[in-house]
Each structure stands twice: as C-alpha cells, then as structure tokens.
Length: 228
Image (cartoon, rainbow, N blue to C red; front, side, top):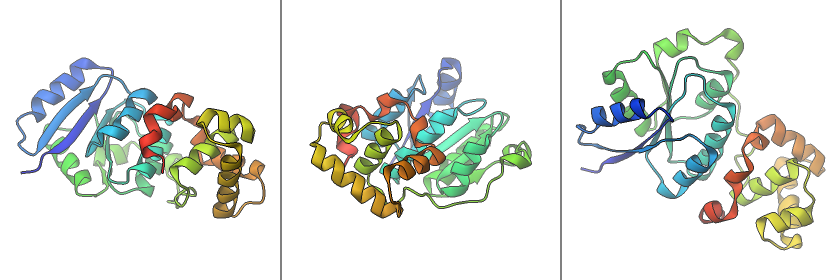
C-alpha cells in the first residue's frame, strides 16, 4: 500500500505531537512534523513534495495563504488542509478557486480530520459545516480564475521583483540571469497577461497578492529546482 506523505506544520508542539500520535496508527499515512509555518519552512516542502500539508492556525496568515497559492502553481499535486478557529476571506478565496484544499474547525473530531485528509488526497475540496457557519458574508467572494495560471515559475519570480520596483538590471542580479534574459521574461509576461507595460503588470501582481510573500521564499538555492 502506498503511504500518503502528510506534513503537520505548527509552532504548537503539543498540537502537532498529539496529531502525529493519533495519525501514526493509520496504515495509509506517513506523518512528519515541521514546527514552524515560516516562508522558509514552507518553501523547503517544494523539494519534499508531500501529498498533504496540514496547517494549524487559529486565523490564517494572509502571507502563508499567498505562499501556498504559489506552491500550488508550481506543484499542482500538493494538497492542503487548514485547521482553523475562524476562516478568512483569503482562505475562502483559495479554497473556492482550488480543488484539493480543505478547511476544518479546531472543534472537529479525529474522525473528521481523517475524512478531510483523505478527501483532499483524492483531489476533493473539503469545508466543514463548522467552518462554513463561521464565515462572514463579507468574506465570501466569487470564484475567479488565477490570473497567473499561464505564467511560468521563473516569470512569476521576475514579476515578484518587478512589482517591488526593481529594474531589469537589479532583477538580473537577484536571479543570477543576464539582463537580456530578464527583459525577455518581462516581454513574455506582458504578452501572456495581455498588458502594455510593467506598471500594469505590477498592479496586477499586487491585486493578486504575490508581493505579500516574503523575499526569502524566492531565494535562488531553494527554488532553483522548481524554476523551469
């Protein structure tokens, strides 16, 4: 039997250790723990390629949601389960635009957790009734297509630095690329996004939330294997 790789991420060691003990008896689950939800820890999972990332946060951090959105663009087979007290608009937006994303309440049972894990592994969306009940109407947004879905990881990194106001030369130094290559990436970006200039591209990136990700997520050594 193939075991599904589950990674529990939380700074609360008591919570993750208890969950690991509970899940250890499940024959189809291989559980490990990362005691942090920083951008560096989440970035490291790109190489690990788990089946499900379980994130416990009472109120999800907007930056973490943007990082996970970027990770799903790079690894479409990564599945995510949030355990929360209160869902946010950003989290609901991620779940509504993606399959293989789950949201469950901290008040849920172990049986529900197992069901939610297996649902997202199968590529299904899971939102518990408790989580749905706590969603404010203002948090519900219309599902929209990902505006960066046709953009490659390397082009998105160029867009990330561009949205922070860097010139092509400065981007080339950051990414260890020639200035001509960066210029070509910018041209490809504008064409794919149907935009006329880099200012409009930067505005789109900010609306999408890409620049909210910490700079260390895009450090070259860690993400190089994922940039194609």
